[in-house]
Every structure is written in structure tokens, then in C-alpha cells.
Length: 344
Image (cartoon, rainbow, N blue to C red; front, side, top):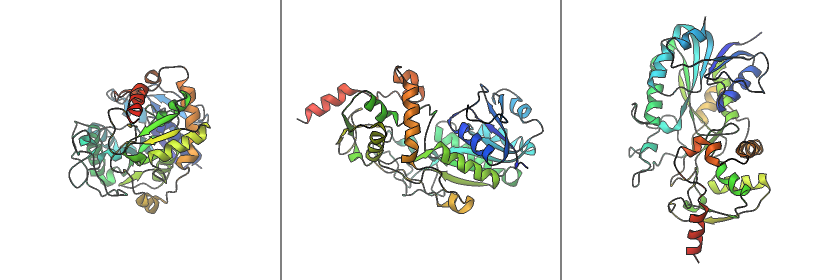
């Protein structure tokens, strides 16, 4: 006997692939919807995959047909998507929607939206609970759009019970913007040294796709209107991440610690931050009985193997456009060498 039918929007993406596997393993009949209609080779044959572009008028309603017991939305982005789901509430039993830790704001009104200003990087409580302040809803930034999405769905209440998962720094295979590439490519390039700003102590809480999928699985089986953080059991420092990746790749690198801010791209990594970003997971443990299925270190061999294979002989910007979109040359070795020489 199945638990019911689950409809996953964004099923062919990084998180969607893992969420589909977790739901099937838990006894759900799953339809995986995406714009390309692609399948993951690890999905069982009974998973139904469909092509669906939610921006096309009536496409989502048609795709849902007679409805579903739970709708999992990996790619919802703004208030409009929230209204799209609430408008179909009569055909959706409950929802699980991926949001982001980017919605948080500190006591001084700083958020990820202000991080490029002088002293603009937020200093959140460590760990950050779900009742921390958030940015105002709007349509100008990623964070303001995500909180607008949350507000629309929470306002529906019992008409559409929705669990919102505020994800940390998502990692694992199929990531379009993999932070781990910063260390992996240096090892592949035979780069013997790396420079880390802030003394290598920056912490940006990661969440592996399988841990996020476990939260999806639990929330699907326990409907409710709630907001929960989504993060790994640990929030390693950037120096610890480098050491773990070196161990997987079988290399030994020299780590040079830079005190304070990066100098241009020197010392800058995708985790670099002057204040720690650490999410509190006690609410998910209490409300859903959540326990992580994999640690950061345990997940790395699979991630490193995928990164290495996907990169191949290609230029990194071509292989990982999601990382290239930030417009930062994370592999400016000439600048690093010049900085190292300047230190004598």
C-alpha cells in the first residue's frame, strides 16, 4: 500500500533527483516534473517523468490532473509561485517547498543583500533559529523574493499546509554552482598552496542534497504549516573543508591563512564570510524527528568524483555556469602568487 501520490516540481535538478529517490523509497507514487522531463538513472522505473513549464498558462494545473496528496516544489522562487500553488489548493493535499537561509536579517538590518556594503555582512545568532528576523518581502533580490514566497504560502494556512525548508549552502552531485570546486580544481591543477581569508575560520553552513531530501520525506509524511531550517549536522570551517577534500583527493596542500578580508580575489572562497552562518536544526528534530542521513565528510567522495568527471578537460566556467555567474575568477593563481611573493 502506497502513502499516496507525490508531485515533484523541479524533479530533474540537483535537489529534485534526491527528493524523488527518498519519496519512492518511503512508499510514495512519484511524478517528477521538469522543463526537460529528464530522468535520473537511479530512479526506479515506476517514477513517472513529465515535461512541464510552470510559466506556461495552465500547465501546472494540467500536469496535476486530478491532484496529488503532496506537492514538492524545489524551484519555487517568488510570491507569484506562491499564489500559483495556493490557487490550486483544492487539488493539493499539502506542500513541501524549498526556501533559503538568504531570507534572514540580523538585528542591524543586515542580510545577504547588504554584504557588499562596508560592514554590511550580517551577524546572525549562532546558531540561527527560524524565528530570527527576515528581510521584507519584495521582488528585487533573491532573499526578498523567497520571503514573499513564504508569506503567500503560510497565509494559506489549513487550505494548503506547507512546510518551508530554509536551505543552507546546498552541495552534492549535479550542483550547478559547486563551492567544493574551489579546492578540487586546485588539486587537479597541482596547485600546492591556497590562501584563506579570515584565518580560514569562515563557516557557511552546508546541506547535502540527501539531508534536504530526508527533510522533504519527513515533511511529506507529516503535513503542517511551518518553517524549518535545512542544514548538515556540522558547519565546518573553510580550512576544515579544504583538509577534508585534500584527504579525499589524496593530496597535501599548504594552507596560508590571511587575517581579515580578502585582497581582491586572493583569500576569497565561496564560503568566505567575516561572521559565521550556522543554522539551528533543533526545530526539525523536534517537529519531524529529523536525523541527518550523511555528514559533510562522508558525502565528499561522491561529490568529488562527480565534480572531477563533470569538469573533465573543460574550462570551469563552461562546466559550471552557476558558479561562473558570480563574475569572480576563483582561480586567479597569478594574483595569489603575486600576493605570496609580497609577503617575502
